[in-house]
Image (tube, rainbow, N blue to C red; front, side):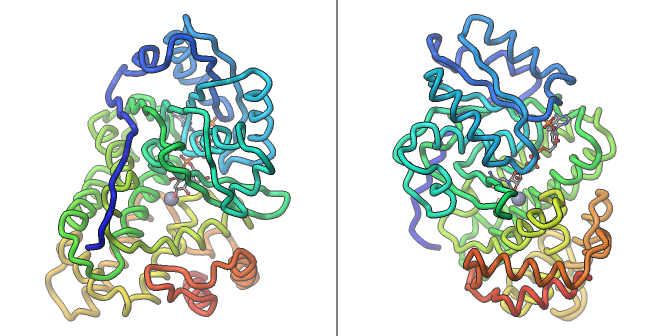
Length: 385
Ligand code: NZQ
Ligand code: ZN
């Protein structure tokens, strides 16, 4: 295990009927900008709860943040922040609204071209404080400092993080708000959280026992609770466990002191850029290929995964690993999430374009040991046709 500093300042307010608590978490004299997406919060009552809680605060609104939040849209909110002296941002929505709001928080006070925060890793010296009311368990954005922003005009999807400035001050996780999610978004959420764990866990042995056991606990919880959560929106106990799993998957606790992978995410992001496939669905396509092609490098952890997560005890090492990978793929499919390029009627041309995009971003040595080269990406995706 490597040295590390662990610091996660996001206050979590978890449970049914907790949205009303936001009023006392935000300074009484704050000038708040509420940010939201395409309108789901207006249909399911979340918007009304937020407005009721903030009835004594000064509130502005910005709606229309898309799934895979777009730079051009977010820059309109940056204008509002500057014009209205906004000093608190409240994201109400899924990962896209949260990520978009983190970018707004960093871009509004930024001196210079805000795109450089993403494209040139320009240093973020200050940011507007932000918080969230999460409506979709998946990304973990509610308790981390990262954001992924898209700019479709130039075919880019890039990440940034400015801890501690872009950690939400607080996040409200009310599992009842997940009831109105479509089955597709539920399945997506379970897969995204699952792959976040494997990106941090399925590397090589690093003698980080707590991180490994926590990772396995989250994976097993998603396997046990995910199907019920996807099938039965009214099972609030399953929803609670999935919500908390998704937060725990990417709040930094299982990546402390260990090398992590993230190659599946980097490749997946390019599938979203090219074909607008939902984030989690891109991961489900890439993951089985990544594990098969990088299986030798990941062998020890894949064996541990097979035994401890899937309880596979019989057979040779190769058989155990093969079975663990296929059981995972079946699990994704059982949640209604397809796992091949063919499911989207995509072929070899897509693979070439993904590789071109990765090269353009200089993402040519991905993974925990920088072994995922463009040649490996070709092999991984050819196995997904
Ligand atoms: O826009 P609205 O109308 O709100 O509808 C949304 C959207 O259409 C809908 N939705 C959300 N909550 C709902 C609801 N519909 C009904 N009831 C509710 N309670 O769901 C749709 C998808 O929302 P979105 O926010 O895009 O989904 P998700 O949370 O999966 O976020 C995906 C984005 O997060 C990024 C992804 O790349 C993608 O851009 N990620 C962010 C990460 C992070 N910050 O750490 C890590 C992830 O790996 C990921 O890359
Ligand atoms: Zn993800």
